[in-house]
Length: 279
Ligand code: C2E
Ligand code: CA
Ligand code: CA
Ligand code: CA
Image 1 (cartoon, rainbow, N blue to C red):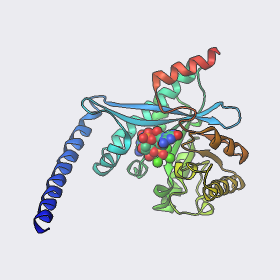
Image 2 (image 1 turned 30 degrees about the vertical axis):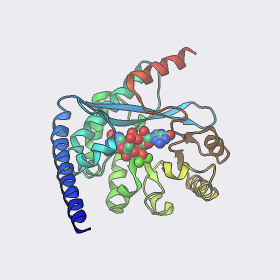
Image 3 (image 1 turned 180 degrees about the vertical axis):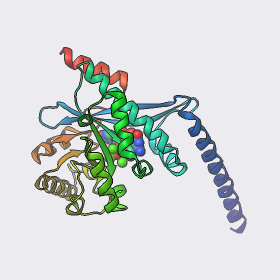
């Protein structure tokens, strides 16, 4: 047993070393990815639960890695966040998303807000509102067509400061959504003191609304509370018609999820929008 234990330790040890070196390699590659133009955005529509009309688009980052293929954000954003690389990457995301939204507008294909995810490091930049203003100016996108998505836990770290930053951003004319709502254990009443426009109910609460009465009760309660505080609500991760029909029943205004569309590359969504316009 002792020998096996030692072997197990050795195995663990080498595995740890491998993970560490993988991470260092990844971090170095990440450093070069921007100049090598390896980042791409995919876009997922947000739809009106009744009409099916597209009311917004969320930009989601991917890394087109020369060996590993399309790398999802959960695999590299934490590393980008730790190393501070998320700041220049996030700036690229904002620019690219605003440029795409503007292009769809001028082509007459879509005039709905573009939602962009912000990380903690970006949110903490003292000149964030000025940076956003300069991106809007450079791309030509009106501020009213930009939405910032911030997670509940991010804004709750330092509520006073967050509230101030959010107000300065909102003064530009954009809207604010609280992402992953329900996962941060904060009270909605408290959050409401922030200048926010909408809540995105986390997918984990939507997943089992059809089969689990407790989950259904929670989702329904969040929707009702949001309405009474005059916030609009988006359900994330909607995958089935049964889920959508419950959301309609509960008057959750907007949904997003694989049921309607997976996040798509810009060209694919352009083609889809053209098709919808022609129909
Ligand atoms: P998120 O902001 O909560 O984004 C929603 C995630 O759920 C996306 O994963 C999306 O592809 C996925 N999703 C959408 N509909 C469904 C569905 O019906 N079923 C399931 N199972 N999943 C669905 P993705 O693109 O892998 O992004 C993961 C997370 O990475 C995002 O979660 C966000 O926190 C972060 N992220 C993505 N892009 C950016 C970015 O540009 N900047 C920052 N800071 N974070 C980003
Ligand atoms: Ca989001
Ligand atoms: Ca989310
Ligand atoms: Ca999430």
